[in-house]
Length: 310
Image (cartoon, rainbow, N blue to C red; front, top):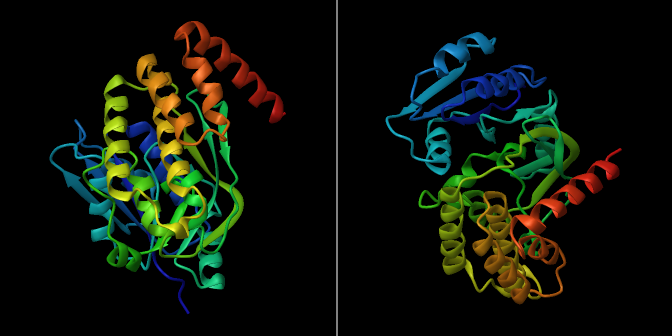
């Protein structure tokens, strides 16, 4: 019996070099029945078809083009709607998969009879330095873990296409945190399956713009308006934990952008919402005196991370 078709959704916007590497990682997959759905989200120059024809060994790819840049949520939704696969796997144009990623996920999904599977991933910066790892290993109903971060990055995900007909698509009014909002709905309705292997290398950006901070600030407020308070089924103090997590994420992003006033306010709000969590305290200290405290603590954080990974 033929293996189920997996549609890989790859949005791309003005990153031809990284896009080529992402496509090559799909082409190297040991799983054979893959359809590639590329969404050019209004790039300044057309490059998707040229690169795809060179990078892929198959003609089984679809290219969708947006006239203007509409954001990753819209781009992913465009790809999902045009996909023919039973399963959907997401890949951003600056990330790559290890060769066995899809093969292991489909095996896990079929064996566990579940609709959603994720893998471990690691994040690397522009120099190739590892800046973080996600080695969460949870299966079954994980809604009680959502307030503390229960949804992995989309490049680590493989999901049945009919899930989107059930719970809806990515929320197109969100410029960022669209995956967090979708993950909240996903975890409340479906059991997860996990492949405990680092099969995704995701890009980590050290420098972000003030505009991105504003978008994240707006997204945080929208998600909190829509989804809080969280129902009791999400666990004890779920609302406080969830609010704390979102404000902490906003504060960390503001730190990277040098928006220290927003960082201080967000991190202090994170601590007030859930004082027993520890992460926000370190970042709040880093934001306390702007660059004079941020840069030294960032150096210590990187040194500690490097030591732990040697």
